[in-house]
Length: 210
Length: 154
Image (cartoon, rainbow over all chains, first blue to last red; front, side, top):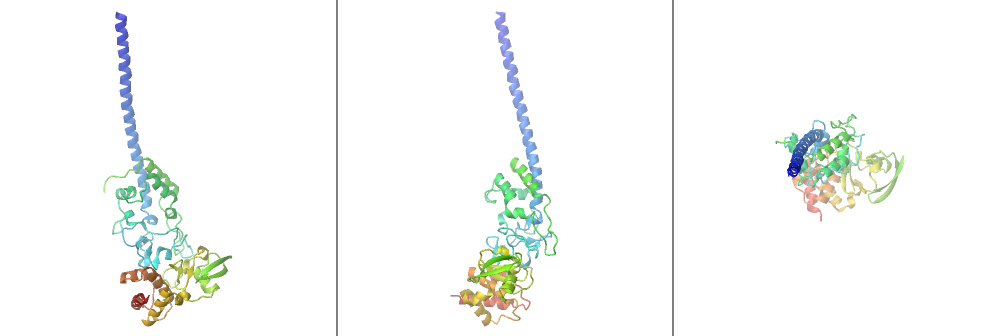
């Protein structure tokens, strides 16, 4: 029965070829996924560095101190009048943030303002006790730690960067007392949101290291 | 010019002013309440302090258009306020005042402190009063008077 034997060989050959194809294509797919993941993580880390460049700009980091006081100015000096953090990050009775900082900037006097002006909590400090900004890896870990960031996941972090009034203020910081404009973060708000979005899509990866 | 209905020391007061006018000048120029003083005009000295919704606020840099419905309390109302009265009495007893120009702001801040912190420590006093500058340097007597007022508040 040579024709039966030939048919059997043919079937075996078909199974072998198709099986091999499944194995090969599966391996190729996994390799592509791994490549995509690696690319995504690389892109995410690059996007994070752009986000970090904004977070450590004086318009943002001046109120993310590790100390008992806010900072002011591009030289990040201690806030004048010995203003202190207070129990809720809003100053103390008699000298609250709202004693001077209103709902919007007052350009005639140079005092900045925005809704609910306050310091970020100490859990969101982005600098050390010597007022030196923390590393990119350290800030990233803080920002993504849901036990420290008001339980914000990636989408909520994106929304925070898109909509929070004091985040938006960084791009509308008004005039200094001498009438000149305050400096802006290194990215536009649109670029900042786009970078955050890419970082979130990549799974909020953080750089290695301290 | 815009017309505003302000709640000042419990009374409705109507003013017609430019929306950007600082509350300080509405009080002094339009309502003729000159107890609140102009010091620096940039929120750096505390002489213009009033209470807005209970918060000690620098009136020199609060545009009247931002006040809204929030009640304003000025130095003129302190003699009828139990804490305000105690602070003013303590100020007299300790003879705090020298030139006196900054003192209405000092008293308004001290009252805001004591309403939230009836038994303040030296640190509480230093932190709360740190934004009120006194060229005569009456700071030691201010601290003593705040402590005395705290003892005398029923």
